[in-house]
Length: 293
Image: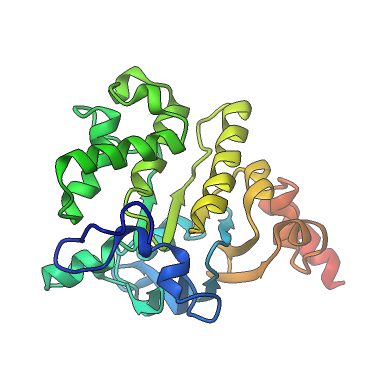
């Protein structure tokens, strides 16, 4: 059951340390860590992208990619439970998750939301709190842990991301890369079944970005947590993602799901090949025309 197994969550008896990828899915024969079924996402009844179907296995790193305006951020907001789907459903560890934030029953809402950890762009740390306090926040919100164990757990998570010595620092006193790592420590605080990363490498220099990629891989291996990341950083994508889904802004639907390097080298879709080669939309259209003839 692990170090945290003897403590209870608020409103239930589930152990924090027992709800990671393996426990949440019931082993390899269980449901996916995250699943999108017939999903359409958008605003005001107008779909940005439709017909989304994919499943993320426990321990898998799955990327959402595509050009500007294709619906990556809208899809991520839906997966986070912040935006209701226009159609279809999202399931986490086999249970419905879409609109979890609107669940009227407080205990059920808490149970659903703590299955998912989120790293927002920039880290989204609270400036008036130390890193230790930021990481401890979800533990105070969603569990009945005594304060000494909240602090011990938060220190452990900071140590996992290489920030043990910075626990007492405020966000204004650290670099952008450190803020991303602190945000990642907070996202992992409750041992979620799925971790959602929003442009984790955005704004980072190449060396810091590569270090964050290595950290994501190591944490995946250590914790067994499934990861869904939205990214347009091709080196990062190719370094960490096991599979990816490409969303097309032009067609408002997924074009292909596969292994990123294979999509780059042999996709049947000119738009996808152009994306990986950093070509313009006009070049992709021209390539599509050449293929058609």
